[in-house]
Amino acid sequence: HPIAPPSIPYALDADGSGSADEVARQNPCRIIALCPVTESTGSVTAQVSVYCPVQKQSGSLICCEYVTLKGTDAELATVSGFIQSLLIGDLPKFLWWKGIPDLQHELFRKLAPAANLVIVDSSTFDDAITALTNIHSLHQQGINVSDLNWRRLAVWQELTAEAFDPPSRR
Image (tube, rainbow, N blue to C red):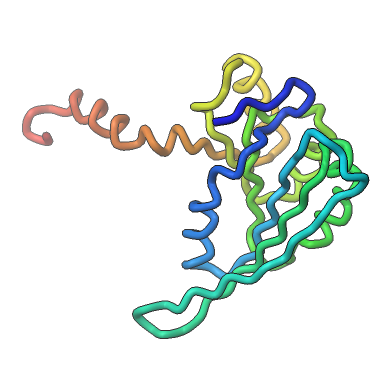
């Protein structure tokens, strides 16, 4: 994984696009990808595309719109109102923040409350104390947070718990 420069609190990568494709295969959705860049082009650039995979079982289409916005951290923050206007009212909204949730980051402060769920990946955190403190603050604000790393460990959590079961339940 590329490491983000200190001035940008989230990752400068496109990892996870496969996860987005999997969501798009199963649910109608609009995916808004914010791609920070280090060098300014003067404004935020946008690319819009539609993905409609044919469902093999039913032959029907489930379509997903992809909106990719590229710009510097400051440029993306200036269009946060525009980003919020792209959200579809009846669809669930997920914010996948690829870094430690930064409660002081303007874009994060504006997008997190609008999301039904903020997704993080604790396997990438280099400062666990700050990350856990910020996640706790989000919970106190009523913002739901899910950790991809915690989900990856679910099988191990279950196996560990089973070790404490009586022999008759194993």
